[in-house]
Image 1 (tube, rainbow, N blue to C red):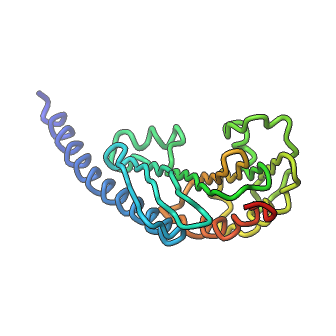
Image 2 (cartoon, rainbow, N blue to C red):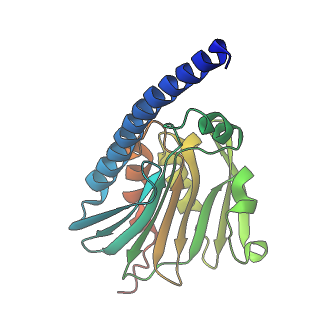
Length: 212
């Protein structure tokens, strides 16, 4: 067998092994940073994390204090540990992602969405064609506001204006039917705190003050 070919195989194996350990360490750091930020914001009474594929991500669930009841979500991470697959995943648009549903017993004023405009078609918003809408811009990025029933566009704009990093925001919504808030972000370097903290501080805007 060609010695150059053998040398190339050995070098690739060594590089892949080193890359695996460095990527694994990086993903563990990012996951820890994201979970720490989220716990600092939501201050859960109990936490539960379930690994969903080595260092690819976690499902998590929290028990929360009033006015919220619990939160459930997912953090998925780019395959930084895979030297061969990482370039392919980047071409395919695979990035770190964060999703969380926050549940409450309080009645909400209506249904409202703040969505990155280019993501609207993939957001899976039921009955979107029948909803009121408005286009807004923040830090050079386009967003779509959608609402049904009571005009909640002003409160959605307050959420948008409060975001320190709107470029990482994909979708925020308040669902009246199941008393749920949803946040979808693309965290940068594992940092969630700025945007999520700003949103969490303003969730009460969507509570129906005239109901329990």
